Image (cartoon, chains in turn orange, yellow):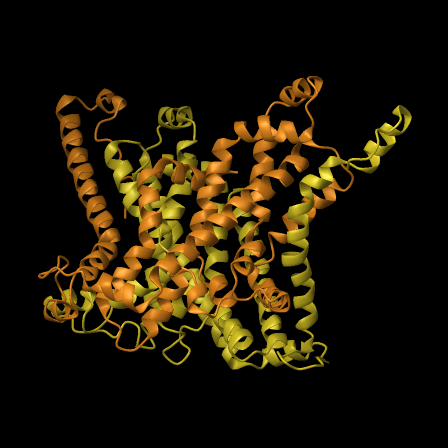
Length: 300
Length: 301
């Protein structure tokens, strides 16, 4: 794909060349045709990108017989809710949705609280060992979680926490990346606020809770979105911690379902669609937030 | 903390001894110590042992697990698969991300709509992506074969063929992740001051030259970031191959993490699996360092 596809057709300086009016009229026409072609290519690429999801939705609303008869059609030739019914009958579905919400929501809220406490102390309080702690937290970022997963599994086993909500949530309730991101944000807030509050008799907790947190809503919201999405979609972690299907989260239960023999396609696609929908809706509603959060994580 | 009020003289000293900052960092510190630091140490320890679940004693093996790894052809195969997948997805995602960031640079309703579409696969879980693509590529009911059949291209066995399975995973991996790369690069490209472009145009730079001399240098940091992230993500390949191929056909898509999972959580050879994890860590470190060097020096000119 060419890199200058969607540049605007006309540029202010394009008309001021020395080549005379007829020549630059031709150039303008050519570049207009080029950018129209580029727009078409981009639209086709975007539709192709979304096609798997459209097909997933189409399959979810049809019967297996219809799918075998007309595999090439995206829109069902006969609409049916059997797929959704089958998901409901064959999986403890309500339970799984609840589990996923409790896991992703619970862990993210705890994580925001614990990470912001630590980040606040690291950014704005003096204490012995502060730098050492910060370096240590940064260092843990470099070790991939695959290294820790077996010992953590054993720890959860000894605690009797396998197949439990706390087993899923507690080890995910803090993150070095979150501490780092929030610390960077807190450092930018003006120090005068703390000093003024201190003169008025506020302690560290009051400053954290009443001043720093309210001013940090954008950073907290970005972190919430990123973490919630990551945990909602997490696969290996629930697979390791839970073996009992009623304790699984939606993505990890779905694959169990997909490897069963003779599972019907509509049910599987319906399950996939349901598992995707909360994030998809959240994304479409809060798209700018989502994108800013992702972009911000990459700029600095 | 409901002790008697301290006499004025001791207050400062008490304050020095009990600093409220420790209460702030305590929850995270405890969690990091128990669930990250201790496991790192334990994992290193385990990798030196013959350690399996249920045995009372764990035999020290020194570097035995590591020397076994050197002669383990299944591990070398998994490493090769992982590196190929990583190279393919990283190159694809960064190239597509750069092209789209440049193409969709200006914000209008049209480009916003396209950005949303391109970013969308990124929010889906790998499990959903794997399931949907497995059925898209199914020889009997899949859309891809049905459409290819229309143009007479037959029925390639995407996931069953030893030569096609890995490239197919790479394509799906690129499709899943290029939106993320695009968004990060877009943020970077939009942060490049417009006057740099004006200056370049005054110097007679065309679009290609502007891209080469203004856009690319301005995006160096962001490109480095997305390349490293794409690489690390690629080296941790698990979900996609687990769901789409289960590592098959005959180990042609078995990744290092999948092998680790097999050894650790299916065979319960925890010591050996820990050694696999540490070798993977070394590979990730080495590759990330190499990228940092290459991308830094290539721009010095």
